[in-house]
Image (cartoon, rainbow, N blue to C red; front, side, top):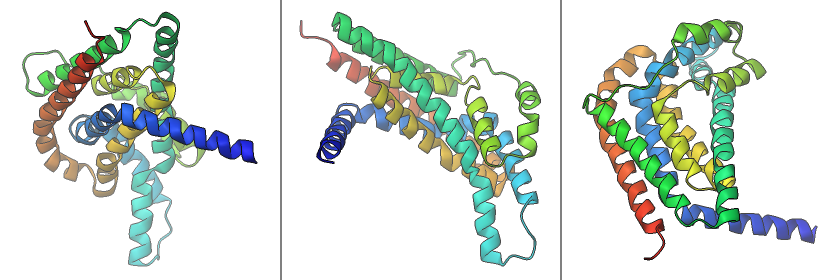
Length: 254
């Protein structure tokens, strides 16, 4: 019992240390998910969320009171199994990418690894800012929705329980430039646990926009998506500056 408490206390201290050391990265990832989801993810993941919401709403019983009906509608729009599946994919990808960098840092002691990774992440977010400002930068390659829908058609018909979770796992691999920048920033921590926390923060940031789409429908998303698109370059640029500053600070003294 004492050993268990000691291990838990050590783990808590380690988590606190990671949060302090990587706080700016966690904040950047959350903001990227919050604004980026409204301007970018809605177009890519929104149709799948709407499809799930429609299936879930069709399964609701009629005759419920107004309050209960709205709560059930909110639950259907949230699509918790799908969100958990998507979070699992993003968190595991972040941890897997950070692991080899952590091993390299420990085995070689190369002092420029963290600065280089942070600089790469800053460049990816700067690229997102340039895309948002329409400076002629090519858009990220996107897998056509109909191909993904073909693979996941049976899951979309009944997106409940484990099927919704598996759907989130699979759709978490949709190619996305915003996701690439988030993964690069998470990998820059060179710590699997820190990367996992960072990507979980990114997922939390994407939930409000997708929940709004599921609850209010695509019409609502169409209204506020232009505003989010105008804000995205500034958020991406802010993230790029923060990561670049961290990269410079991580450089070893001359």
